[in-house]
Amino acid sequence: MSDQVQRFENNSGEPIVRGYLHTSTRVARDGLVLTHGAGANCEAPLLVALAEVFCDAGMSVLRCDLPFRQLRPHGPPMRGSAERDQAGLRGAVEAMRKIVPGRVFLGGHSYGGRQASMLAANDPELVPALLLLSYPLHPPKKREEMRTAHFPSLQTPALFVSGTRDGFGTIDEIREALKLIPARTELLAIEGAGHELMTPKNRSELPTKIASAFLKFMPE
Image 1: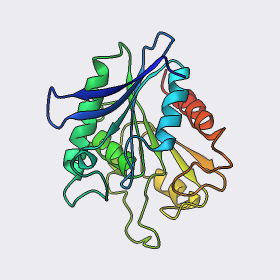
Image 2: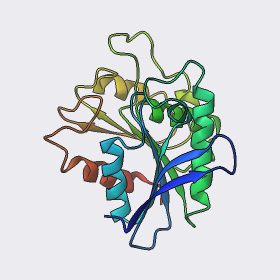
Image 3: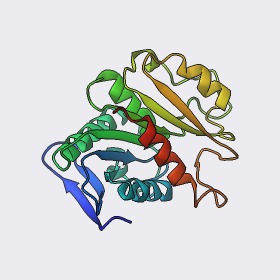
Image 4: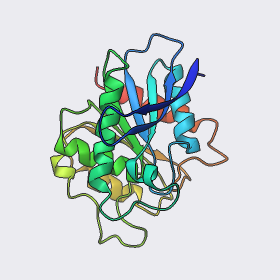
């Protein structure tokens, strides 16, 4: 467990960075920004569990609400939210740079991960690596609507974590899509998991499994 989890809000720029900051009992040099999917917020159980495990490993973690969630407590992102949500993630990364002396990484679940990858594709120097949880490759049962247009521009190493029963993209589809990315990528497949990744059966070991994989994937 972290020695403290504090409410975090930074109003130095627009949009506001809002979330929870986990600080480690160890000397933390690196930091990680984690954000949520379209139907959740930064208090999603998966994000909380991951933040605690990464914190135990010696990283400071900011799990933050995307701007669309700050504007409405429930419901999916409004049309046209992507640009502002990406600006929110940029602000969160910049806020973490003021907190930790080392590198800052960026991760997100589903919609949040997609926005993180789009932001990184437009700014290859923003973060040294991405953690993309349940990347929404296409809407369920709509394989013709692939969300990979930015993949050929993604120069940031990325670890993808996907469940073998995810309706937003099969493991084979994800593997094929990763061939479009010129940067180093890896895929961690979670057997039996759907889009939410965490299940009653894997709840105890999944966060550690994901964190261990990302810590090994991170560039030295």
